[in-house]
Length: 338
Image 1 (tube, rainbow, N blue to C red):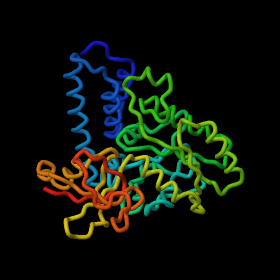
Image 2 (tube, one colour):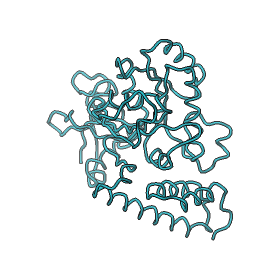
Image 3 (cartoon, rainbow, N blue to C red):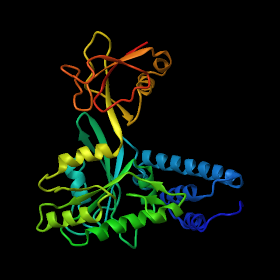
Image 4 (cartoon, one colour):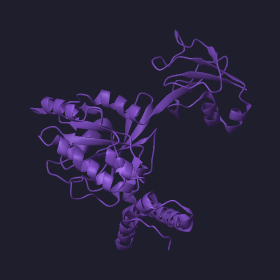
C-alpha cells in the first residue's frame, strides 16, 4: 500500500467498502481518484482504481440496456453540453426543467419529489443543451452518487427559492456539500488553496419564483451578497420571466462557440453548426470537419462574427483571408481550402 494516503482518500475508500450499489461504488472510486496523492508510489494504485472504475461504469451501462435501476444514476451526455441543476428542497428545479426543455418531471408541492436524475434537452438557437434535474440536497445530506454526476457534467446551475428569506443559506448548503466532495464553484477562496485535489465547476445561480411577493427584493440582496463571486439570474418557471436570458447565460457558461462552414462557391450551411470550445482556432475546426483536412489545410476565409451568423451584409469579416491560428468567435462562417 503506498504511503501518504490522505484522510480524504481513506474516507472515500471506506465509503467504497460500505457501498451497497454499483452507483455508490462508482461515486466513491471517482472521489478516490480525485484526492489520491499523485507520485510514483501511487502509480500502481491509481491504475488499479481507473480499471475498477471503467469496469463498474461498463456494468452500469449494461444494466441500462437491460433496464437496471442503478443505470438511472448514470446520465449519458447529449447535445452541446451537460449542465446539472442542483438545489435544496422545493427550489423549483423540476419546474425549471419543464419550462426550459421537453422533459416532463414529476412536480408537486412537497419537498423531495425528485428521486432520480431527470434529463431534458434545452434548445438554444440552433443547438441543444442537456439539463439534468437532480434530487435535492441539504446542509446535512447529499445523495452519494450526486458528486460523480456533478463532476462529469460540464457546468452547474444552483437553483434557489426566492419565495423565502434563506436564499443565501440555500447557496451555501449546495457549495458546502460540493466542497466536501472536492468540487468548488464560484470565486476561489483562501481555503480553496488548501484543497489541491479540488475540481472547479463553472456555475451560476438561478433565483426561481420571481413571480412571488418579495422575490425581486430578495434577488437584489442575493446579487449584492454574491457580487464578484457568482452570477445571479432571476427567473420564473411559472410565467417565463427571464428564461430567454437564462438560456443565453447557460450557453455562455459552457464556454462554447458555434461555427458554420461554407463550401467554396456555395451558400453556407447555417442549419448545423460545429461546436467548439471558446478559444479554438481555424485549424481546430478543420480537424473536426475531417482529420485529413487539418493536415492538408492551406488557407481559410471568414464571414460573419458573434452577432451575425450570415455572411450576407457582414461588415466584420466580408470573406477575409485568415491564418490557421485565427481564433474563432460564436457565429463565424468559415470556408476551408486544401
